[in-house]
Image: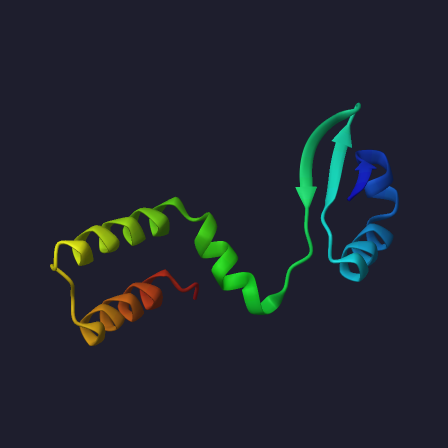
Length: 94
């Protein structure tokens, strides 16, 4: 894993990003010797899953759905998909 200080990142951003894309591995960013961030390459095919996996609201909803399913209190797939599409339209920018 590459370690880059903030000054180097500012100066060589394009080179650091190219290295991420080639290696497929993240880079750690330091400031005054302390870790402050991590940047990682993105696979467009996995982006949606990654973003959803970072959403606490989505994860809480997923846990609730699992609990309901275990109790046999599920929802029909078409009804659930319709509700999800409706929420997505409301949340979409523009």
